[in-house]
Image (cartoon, rainbow over all chains, first blue to last red; front, side, top):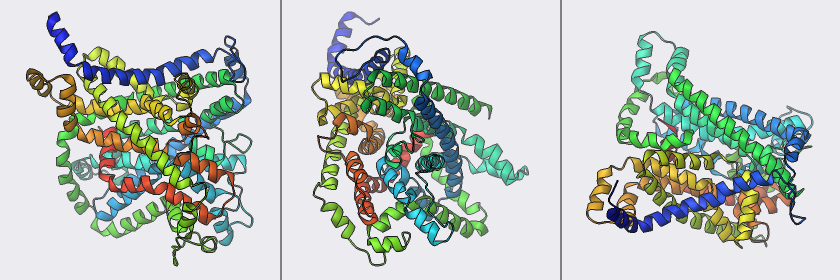
Length: 299
Length: 305
């Protein structure tokens, strides 16, 4: 315990710093913590900006969610997208990273280029891929010219193909990120490990399983977690590419929240769905992180 | 939380980093010299295929509509600036205004987030372990919370403050969101690595917290500032949801919402589309290419043990 006089002197001496720090924390409280609590409260009401006041309706919104086919479809699509995209982006990222893990200038240039999908905004990504995938788009024109197909494939108009197309685009964006993360991890593996493995008679596939996969485990944890969280938050790419269509086939839960809130003006119900998405993200992020962390230790 | 530990781990690892390049050249030299041309060809082909949408955007921005339709993948044999001129000559000044508004939002947000995040991190990194862990855990949640969850209440809070549908409102909400969490996690990792003696010595010389932070700590954590500035600039620049709803359609568009509103509404030919996309994407891409070393360092810092 410091004497009171020193404490006072310290406090006044550090006043400026404390004020800035406190202001930062205050803003975080006002724009993250308070909004989450407000959303939680709204989720038990029938709040609607078009009518004044709101009524406490208990858990009605949550009961309604159980029988909401659009919500159900959006959650299933979001989860499928999260799992599929995370899997593809991490496998592709690791493979691409292994291919590019050399020091020559050309490889360094290629590495720089491979990150580009992460640099441009989701809106640009959406529009460029839309030009590729749309009915009379670049992909169909090329396929027809090469006589692969007779008539254009409806990449964004057929519900299943549209879901697949969204998956391709999101996996593409995330692969730029995972490649760089895995490259950083690969560069930290000492060559001696591979040499020792070769001497002990380990083949290429054994060296990959016993050395590479184990050494990049921490990178896998980060890369998988961030991929999952990114898909759970996903909004801009889908909004531009398909707007959630056709027939809501590519509507993510995040998009459904925005639509419920701003198109149908049901703030209360949108808040309840938002609370669900928050809980879902927390459960997925925490459980996946803990499983992968344990795997890091086991490996 | 993953992200919470990541920067701390690196900070301790940092000193060993200069040793790494020494092992790397040996690796490539030793490795099956014969297969290297095959490998190089494969790498070039795979990466080019991977970035083909970006390649298409760049080449087709400089081709006429006829040339694009004839063969989208061909390089611009007779390059034209017509598409770019059309994009810049639009009566709604989509590109010019969008770039200007995005620049204002990014510069104001990042210039304020850096002192807020670093001062807070300095303060918290000198606290006792227990309260520090609790506060950092609360901040970690900010990285994970989907922005759609806090969007509606944020707009109501800004309305209450009289700042809804305004640039100050958008910037203020940027300062408090997950961006603040990110800044704090990067800074805390670096600041833990600053020895206590440095701070103690300055204390004995009579310097206050504010002065120690600004004149001693900030120069020591410059790499952290670079990482924070680069990534936050990119994210805020590319943000779409918040400008769309916090700013709204009547206050002028950022580059992302502007593209969404103008390009989404009308059918346009490929030349125009790619011209606009090229101009809209060129600033972040140029920034990335100029600062790719810091980019890679930042990503490495956040993601390896």
